[in-house]
Image 1 (cartoon, rainbow, N blue to C red):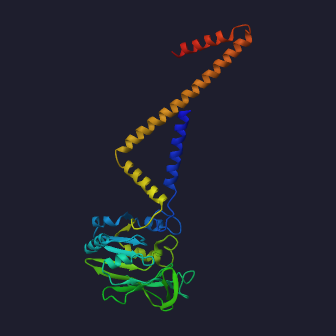
Image 2 (cartoon, rainbow, N blue to C red; image 1 turned 90 degrees about the vertical axis):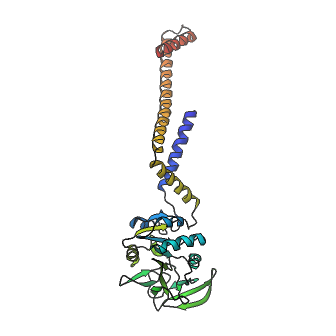
Image 3 (cartoon, helix red, strand yellow; image 1 turned 45 degrees about the vertical axis):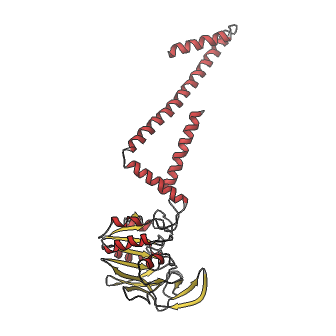
Length: 330
């Protein structure tokens, strides 16, 4: 019975691990999320590598780093890493989500701010006014991007950098305080894409994170804009500034463990150990099956003899059959 319990546990664990490995994360902006709110298309299409913000000191010229919709706090250490990366010639692209990157922008001493509000356009839009069309001027072209519940950038207090993307003259920004709409409005055109040189590099701030998600990346010129931004640079995405669910944490740990094992000598230990365990389990099962079949045959043989010789002693006959069986096995 114990061998069946062990086998059942092993099979159950294998099924659970396979399900976790193949069922993707559903977290917002997860690079593994293939649904409308994920970044799987962006990451796979452009072969984007994942890094933490502390890894910025390992990369430099010829790269572009995307920080998309962060929702964790930043500190001076993070800002120093970003500033050092920019000073060495890196391209750093912030795609904001309702001001979540304002803390980092302030720590970088960039004198712009993201409005607390939602940008709308009643005429130039995708499906509704909360998905407005905006115009970006890049590579001597005008690209028509479509935002998704984005905001705008206040550049009134800065004398550095430039705004290279605007909403239309018909657009307006609904002002919010906390989660409440104040009724106030800012009329367009409003800045939505700002860039500034920092050291040898360039910092971009875009006032929406949604142009990268699966449901928006192929709308309008969104994908073309991303293609222009990446150009010939090696793209990276910072993944440690999101609050992720427990399932995603466990799944990433499992995948990282499997990647480590498959790339090391430990894989041979696991393969050998797994092979030995499978052999032992199936050997025990097969032996038990043979014993059961052998026992059934002996019982049938005993029954046939007793039918022919009903006056023979059953106990003595059973003992003789068992002794003959063990002599044959030995």
